[in-house]
Image 1 (cartoon, rainbow, N blue to C red):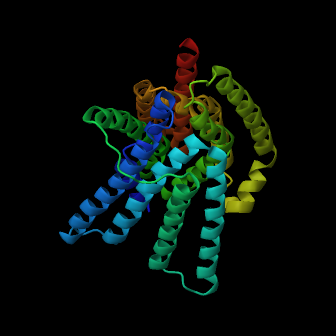
Image 2 (cartoon, one colour):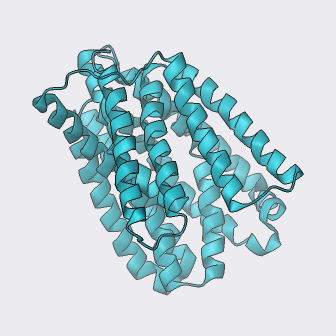
Length: 346
């Protein structure tokens, strides 16, 4: 499934996110073109992947990975288009399909049908359902519309930059664990992973605002105050959640993971410090994409990633998981502050 995630980021070429830039400048004029290109990308990836598989390249479940990646490419891009058009409707569809997906997994357990093949099948059904429902409820159809060479290159210019941005985000979030695996014990990696899981849970509030802002910022009438208000509300919720974690965090970790993982508590608090500044990034990222400022965001994230790598390289050998947490907190803080300073300045 990790391969599927990597493939759909690369195969999607950031097309769904790039749609917000065109939506802002051209309203709905480009919707069908983006839907058509989404299906072409998914099919092309599938064809190329199957050729590689048929060439006897040694990849376990190669054919399955290719099919799932093709579906995920289409689903991911359609999801972004749906968020930009109407985030509330999109959330209803995702919730409904998620319930169906959960029921199917429970049925596999109840009827003792659990196997990797059946899990892959259920995952494929989940992706297919989302694609069909997005097309139906948003009246999006993959019909061919003429796209000039200039339009084609402009679309994929913004798409490619959005893809690089997504890869940098993924890299920045995972580099600490990757380096820990190389420089520390598996036990420390487990402790740190628990801390990261909790810190990510507390970023769900700005994440929810991010989805709304993807749609709002794609409109020419978007006002800067909406982003500032979202940041204020997110900060308030984050502070309340941190207070709650200080009070009940040790109990929650012990309940969910066992007493052997209690060392994750102080590590989580350190990462929280950086997560506060990440609110700026979470809220402002969709605005930068819709305004065609992906290159600015890429520069900021590149600096943050370099800081993250450098600090981890020095701190992990000396301070283990505490060092990794400090490195992440500093790089997240730098990233968030750069975003808010640049946004307010411009």
